[in-house]
Length: 143
Image 1 (spheres, helix red, strand yellow):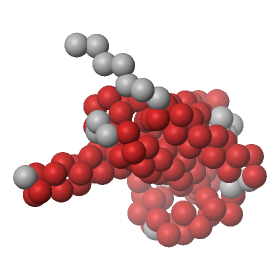
Image 2: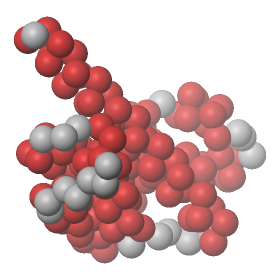
Image 3: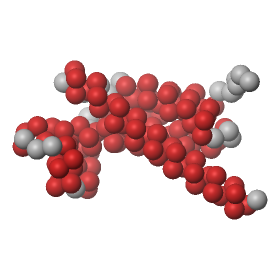
Image 4: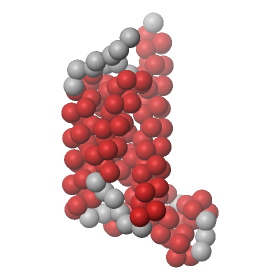
């Protein structure tokens, strides 16, 4: 019974991480199409991730909160890394995957950190707050 619970928690963590990465990658699409940063989409990402994790990944309220925070924070960081990689790829005339492989994630992460503004951080914190509110509200499941 204990092993089953531990494996379930590990699986929930992996699902939250994958949902965060998918949200970050999906967030990049309108940014590329509109050719401008969209940090306010952190609100939508926090809302959708908390809702998805609460309904489909985990049932316990505090675990949903932690997993939603993790997924939202990961989406916010990942979209910044992808944005920097896309900008470098456009400047150098390389593909996105080749740029990420050549530059390395540590360099892309550092460039994304240097490029982040206070407004970006504000929207990220607002997205985390939305994820908190959505994950702590009482679940209404229809059966």
